[in-house]
Image (cartoon, rainbow, N blue to C red; front, side, top):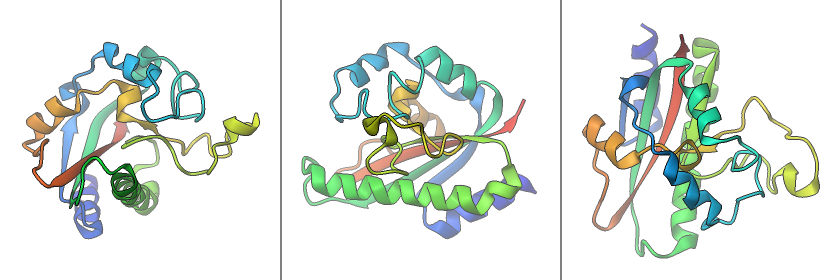
Length: 180
């Protein structure tokens, strides 16, 4: 019953694709952390959900490994120019807002969970770390799939979801639940 309700909520919120999987199916590659360290997104050391503040790859994986199931969420959206950061950031923000709405809707149902988003946590803008303050929402912050070093291309393949979408952009998030 719990899984039915979760999938129904994902459908009602408008996710393009969604699937519940066993967490054992998720593949990780710790070498991906170097992409965070290269600071392409500009959030390294500037967001509590990003490295190094979020913890090491091993620490994040250990947190994820405490759950049996994960809800994989995907949105696919038309994009005029995939290289236009301002356009793709808005699409990513919308994807993450949908994920947050799903979490809010299911919070009582799942109680213990761990989110992994498309990009850094955006609950506070700017993140409190930039002002030397404690995280305002330590139980709600969400690290990105990159910080977790999740191989999203393999996750998409496992789920049967498209990864490359001509003229569109696909964003993913995960909601780990069902504690071991």
